[in-house]
Image (cartoon, rainbow, N blue to C red; front, side, top):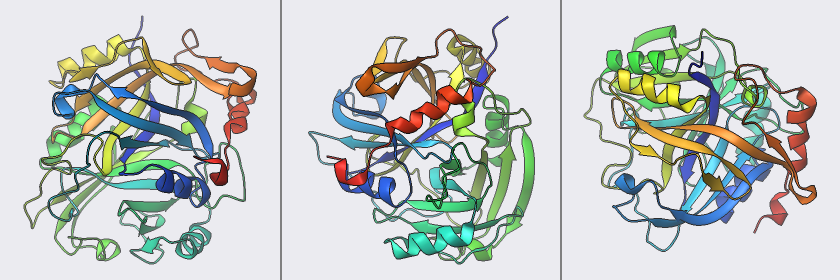
Length: 358
């Protein structure tokens, strides 16, 4: 009997005004070297979030060889992007912070500081018991680097790994815990703390009083590409002092900043049934015939209780060595079992150097 399988965080979507400079920086400085696709086209199936009209765009999906989720860097084309009407504050509804893995947090801190990042904290202990720090990229996106020894490909030249999770601003903590626990399987509370916190003081709004809840999965990582993505966690943060707004308030999906959180999944029909049963039906369904250049699959979206867009992708094909016509066909693979490592590690041949990005 088929059942929903949430394999892990596939990627975080990052809207940008102009793609090349951020894509090169994420590649060179943050180690997102493995290019899965680079596709120009028209976003025709996200009309509720693009003003009711198809929107031209260019999108790049890249992964870090050390493992973790990837970045989907997304540039709207043919229109003027819109920035937030006020500076975003910690606890605003949506993705506030993207978390990254790092084997050596101090080394990562020094590397990022030397390469143009704005440091928002020193290396310190998080309320949940691991070493971490915050920084801002040159485009005002906030990241958190967390101690995590997971390595898909143990490349010591790269100081941080891929996506380790996200921090999401919420209005109703209990509803959000239920949503992420029941639909996405982040069903274990690692910590639940309330107060003011030294580690976030330099983030806009960080001096307010917050409730912070860290969730992780009780299930092990599973699915064909799960070795690439590794484990992850989600931090829910509720501002108890100020009145938050939506991160994409009066803006389109694809405008600058974090635009969605994407999960790699199996058995989309089972995902649909579970989402509807929880009262969060699909708001967009791209169908099984959707291509993103060199990759294809079935994508859908739901909204969390605060309107944050959560994407599901059931991947059917990904390139390994495009120039030789070698792809991974995932459609008939075991829903739970990771692919043999020699197959997934062949994706290191998709690396591209920053100077060749154009």
